Amino acid sequence: MKEIKLGKRVIKRDKFDLPYIIAEAGVNHEGSIEKAKQMIEEVAKAGGDAIKFQSYKAETLASKYSPAYWDTTKEPTKSQYELFKKYDKFWKNEFEELADYARAYRIDFISTPFDTESADFLEPLVPAYKIASADITNKPFLKYIARKEKPIILSTGASTISEIWKAIEWIKEEGNDQIILLHCVLNYPTKYEDANLGAIKKMRELFSDYIIGYSDHTLPEHVEEVLITAWLLGAQVIEKHYTWNKNLPGNDHYHAMDYSDLKRTIEKMKFVMKIIGKFEKHYLPSEEVSRKYARRSLVAKRDIPKGKIIEDEDITWKRPGTGIPPWMIDLVIGGIALEDIKEDEVLTFGKIRLKH
Image (cartoon, rainbow, N blue to C red; front, top):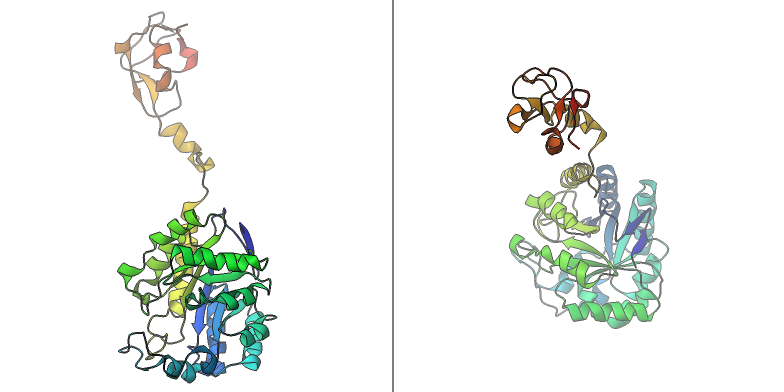
């Protein structure tokens, strides 16, 4: 799909525009509906397009014996089940309330489902489904989501090219081709040297029929540089973890951006957009004065009497560009002075008969 509607915006693959920015609040609300609402307010105020949460129950997501695979110095929980159990506080009623709240603040509400039950109750609430990288090989789940006939934003962390193509194939088999692929590195956090943003450009080449984006897990110290670089490399949808307090321990707070980060990044993107301008080359109306006065004209190097045949030694080129332009020098040399011309005088067509 070369064009996909996401909430209030239409993303066109071949049009350069500001990226659709998803603030991934995830479970950084830590079970507080008020904190979740606070993040909605902040993302809207900063200029984000969407806020995203995660919908799951620990029992359907991870075995009780699933080991931790993250940096336990940042998030000390030793099993996936234990971590997910800490934060699976919201369900249908809470997400309906948050979706209404986001609508009131005029930003899109998205939540990543991790099971069919959450996928079902989210259907009337979300403009698109976000699928986590870990489910890229989950054929039955991808096909189930595809049948909802909504756009699918698919993260591709820790995947091979063939796995991405296979996921696309499963989704398309259900008659859904509204797919956005996000480059992603499935490390929490991702080292800057591992971000591999160049993959965005490669994915645009390989998946030429699909919109490409980026889901970021790097630390927030260089959030502006990372996200703007991803955008300029072709990411048209950008997702970044979001928190109301980056100093909180554990979970996704430590590699998330906050309100100031998001606001500053969007402002800089708008500035970059302004200086990029249009993908065409022509002088601007404001440059007319420069074309006239900063360019050169042919100028008399010495006095030239009326009737003299102009020689190379008679002329040079100087500013302003109000006279005969230097590119016509071959027509001026060998021409005839129609009146006396003073040294340093700008040559004009009324004073020279050009050589034929």
